[in-house]
Image (cartoon, rainbow, N blue to C red; front, side, top):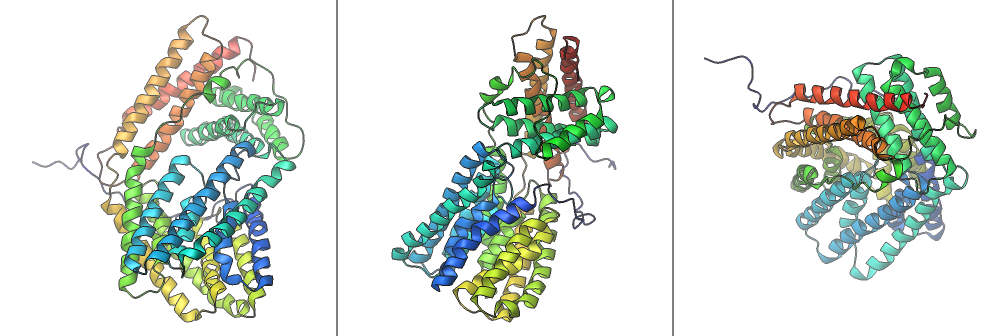
Length: 537
């Protein structure tokens, strides 16, 4: 006798969404920063090459210049390190591509190398949480270089161009710190205060998750900001006010929280929240090692390698002259789970198809001369970064014509053939890439949820033990509270990622709900204890 109710361990196939995939979101509060930065980073090298009549070298200068897209949300101390690693990673990927192109003319070998490099780039970017645009720009450059005519003798000079423009991009990324040295920390703190105010006005579970994530992101930003200056200490106290509002929303003042957030987004001095002893645990947290993530990234790395390789092979079989476009399309799809990968695939296809129409309209203007070509590329660089935060497909409308115009730096291309090949590679890359995501299942997603649950339970027990002590060590309760908050945010992110994965056992939803409720009650208890000791929100 069969039952209509599935067994808890029965693998499930989830519906793939269409509604909302193309919906536009609100623009980022700093959308203009990466947009302007990439223009400032790209323009001088390209205009110099234009003056020298060597636009054929633009691919190598673009490699370094595009590093200016990264790390805009990071404090400047952390940004300096992140941008340096991005530049080195970009030059390394470019170097692999150029050396491979100089050693072999086999398209199959080159596609295989490109797929493996893409998998490494995806894994490293996810592991280090470098943030948008992630591995996609790195993969675009390294894959394109595989099919650039090259000799070994030319490689050092081309890498030197990329390294020099990468150094320029580093300076462009760091320059705003001269005028607003605490800008990233102020913005992160403002987002936490706004999120806490929203929760205080509407204390629903959905709002709670967003608010706790914003507060946790603010702490991560502050803890990576370097020396604890007076400004940073003032920002830490404001984030504590946001934590207090999350623990006791009924007693919070949303208007005050939002007023603080507005002041932080302006140029006024950092608002001074009431001083207290809740910051003693911050230095303890600086010594806490990061959680290992390599095992949970393994399925995505395999998906990327397999999907990119197969997409490139199919493109070659169809006779497309630039199989790296299919490879990059496949690489751009892979997100935390199959459902999100599907959504990104729809966005990529729609954006690219509209983008080729934009290219068809703009190409006559670009063909007026090299200067017009350079200016068109700069305009699309700005447009892509200005729009992509609203939705990925909207930014792709600018990315696609920009990528097509870049091929013209080396010489005039026939527009009809470029459009045909780009459309074919987009469809091949999206289809094959998504099939690879289905085939390579992340069966460890459920295990990751179990591990996150255990981490929350351990953190809650540790915090509860400290709460029960009459006189816990200075800073210990504060550090334990933030460790519990981190574990709860990680659990929610892990559950959401696993919920969109295929072919896995049912998730322990009831246990997750119980753990989250108990964890948030314990967090609230730590705030109440501080308040009874004299700390007022």
